Length: 155
Image 1 (tube, rainbow, N blue to C red):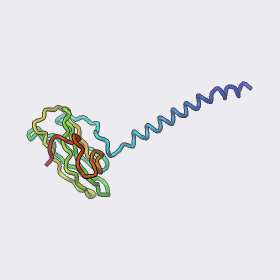
Image 2: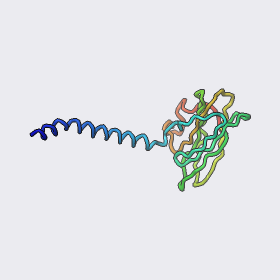
Image 3: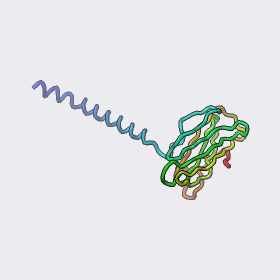
Image 4: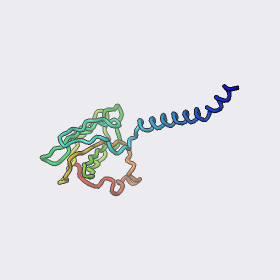
């Protein structure tokens, strides 16, 4: 009789433990899958550092050139499929966003040179990322959402 009573008293505790484990597993899965719409790379770079990472199949290699006050490099398709609407953004520590560059489709292995002018902006660090596919800020008419990409220029 004592064992049944102990078992009944532990049912709510076991239920809550199972729910907690399920919540942890689901939140871990959601955060690890990521999304092509993730805005930031999360990597703050000093002015003399290089960005060299692959995101959504697009490798971005970018450096800051203080003489020309611009970011230069390339974006490259590392997949076996064509990447649609590839573009690059740079975010400066002062809150200014450069880009995005004009969207291009990249065939497997194809590389496109990137140059984004930082104009005369004052900043001491930066972050960058390539974007692939449709942008959540774009509307059906293909225009960028207002204020989303407002500063800097691309060549």
